[in-house]
Image (cartoon, rainbow, N blue to C red):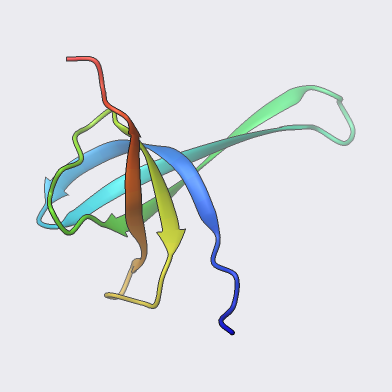
Length: 84
């Protein structure tokens, strides 16, 4: 039985590479001292086999084995298409 793989839902911010997209995942949390809501964004390079993602799409990415130096995520599905 394999390990659990992390999944995130994020927004495509770049699709200029071949079969690769950059996905930004945003999370919100309460600051421990100031009790303000803080936003943090982390960007992943994800494998897009069919080159179907466009900038602004919301996609689900899943953790995979390393595919290149910086790419160890893959696009699982397009959750919502961007407004044209």
